[in-house]
Image 1: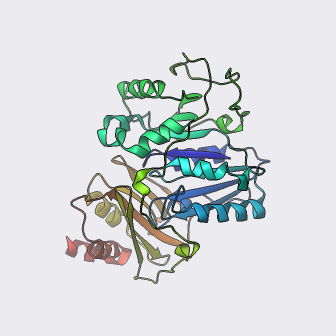
Image 2: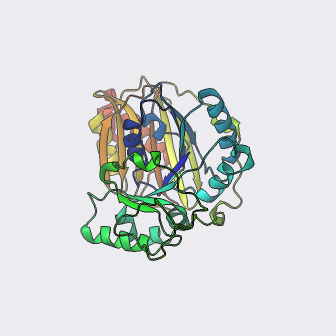
Image 3: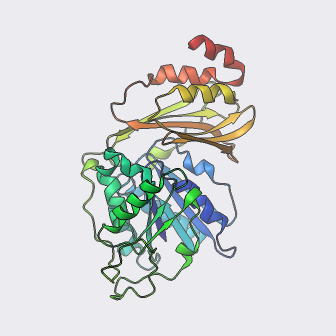
Length: 361
């Protein structure tokens, strides 16, 4: 099994889709996606396949709030599907230490072989002091066995060099660092033989040329203390994930918050058809710092909308169950309309409601 982690907007879903597209045809994979928000959007971005099972666990952190849910889900998934490979994508705000403790516990000792912990890093993040000083951001990179540099096509050469220097100075030393523009990480990073923690020589370990190799050894990731930001949070139970069906014109709204961030999201009935232009204009008008993810039924078909670090991508979606939209922001962020007001604006973006949207402006 593999853990693929990374801070908000680092491109985890894009990278995992690339890995799935290049997986061995004779392997069955299970993908477990944990999201900070309550709505569960990332799971909708993966096509259903006989050889890939996707399970979403929204609304919390796998390392504490969802630990019981994750253990129960894994037992069920492993028993039902007998996968060759398991990939877990924690929330971008999730701390990986508690997750690894669970995966390496006696409960899964004879079932799971934990391979490299892979962290994704957008080099541009290091230019933001709020990211560099965020405990989870640092711990994800420090605990990683290997690091994939994403968004390098958007970063400057200087930012890429600074990222390489930053990673080279981390301890334990990384087993490998590799650039993965457009999420294109070689699937061989998952399929290669594991490096054993009791191998003092680091034989067979592949380092990129810019990784500090002065130690001459591969050191297993040291256990990290559990993030203090989770203290006092209420554990999540299985009942939390009972699906609530939205009615046409009456979306289901969910809010959540922890770790200094807040999420606000909606699920709309599949028969609510949105004007893509009107919806795009509304989302563009929201504060630039917002992380926005959506899968929506539009007059142009079903679309995935993704805004991270100011960059918007729009792609076709195979999801048909309902439309979903979620905003993630720092707690106390200014300039965001109240949930009720924003919901009214979203409803006005339905195809028959473009004139209503203009009246709300």
